[in-house]
Image 1 (cartoon, rainbow, N blue to C red):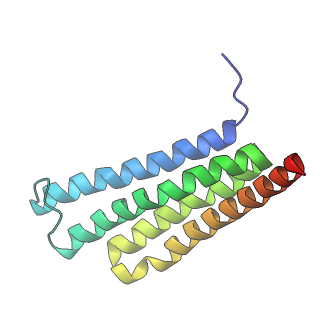
Image 2: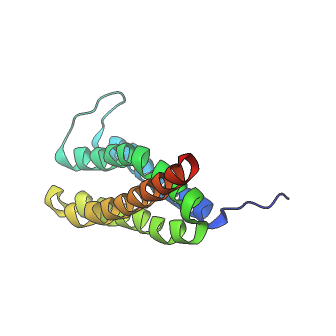
Length: 136
């Protein structure tokens, strides 16, 4: 087996994808429960909340995952994983709140957003410092 330099960040990535898979599974279950065939994207509020959780998470993964990995590559595996672990926890809090009522989504959304912003900002600063050092 070849050693992998970023095992903790890899585990956080897999955990995040498991959370996303759980959300996608919930959409399929909600479709069955409410009798909503694919490709329809409308239905009762209970269905729409489950659909929005999965959709919003997909949108946010496009920002979170690159930030996580750029942070890990520039500042290290342990810190990236420690900060990155907050994101899937926030997404679960977001989902559980949103499933109950749309107005209950803010806390979980904020938790995930803060983790993403910290990763993004850390990677940006580290990359900017490296770029300045490399070209000056």
